[in-house]
Length: 116
Image (spheres, rainbow, N blue to C red):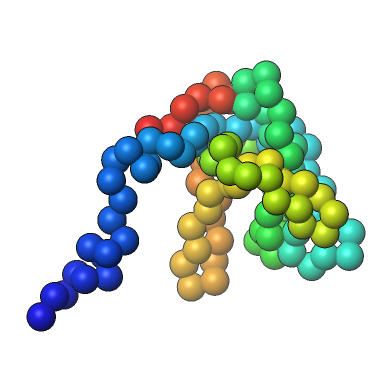
């Protein structure tokens, strides 16, 4: 009997992981998307390059909580559109029993720094 069969089937080889471009990003603007209960639109600075991120985190964070924070984003995903707003990256978060926590840095680090 295989105890870890689910995990073994979902293992990625390192070359697949290396395709992800994960970087630090400083939130410079944030607002709730009108007519949505859960969507926020964030503008993030990635060291001179700005991107827009749309995420369903409004039930856990208010726009004022996020401005100035350094978060972790995946930058090389295909853009997606949510309620008419283009999202050019995906922020990373952990959820535990309904409680959401954005991945951030432990100390100040320059926006756009690659995450390994």
